[in-house]
Image (cartoon, rainbow, N blue to C red; front, side, top):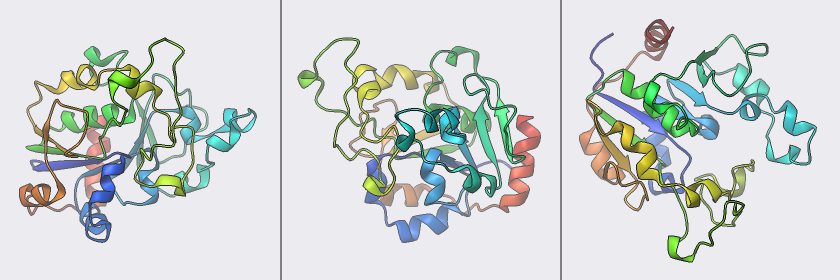
Length: 242
């Protein structure tokens, strides 16, 4: 595999709306791009990452009161070129599409922290040691901590538009702010302080302070002219990861 100059990770945060999507979408299709969760509906990438079983195959949700919160994307996922998930907490081994790989936790120090798809995707990107990693939609949206009640049972839902796709797509994470308001993002991302890559957070108002924050104009100026044959790149990725 040739030296990777940059990897772009697409999260779900509302800051992605700051980009010109008509320009961004075809650009991402030429780069080493890691998609997370429902971003596959709007962008083409090198592969899709996920963490939760109910995202991949929402059979449990279908039989619960929350069934409307788990979109059935089973047939859509089957058509994607490559999906990479986490083996630790999904139990999907018997119902995997042929395009899907499940990984053990890639970094021992992340056991217990590897619960967010964005962190999982960043962990994979870091394994390739690119010169730069760009995080899109990594906002960690929350209200002012001074206004948030305390208590372990405080798991608020909100009308705050925390995803770039807004009300277009409803799922159990829509408006859910409990995790973000009860955890320190800097603790979760501190494991990448020693990364060999320069990591940029393309979200100027993000609550994640671990990485340099830039806007899309600056990101475009920092990108190289490196583009990939995606089919060949995926084969090289599968060889490395498996």
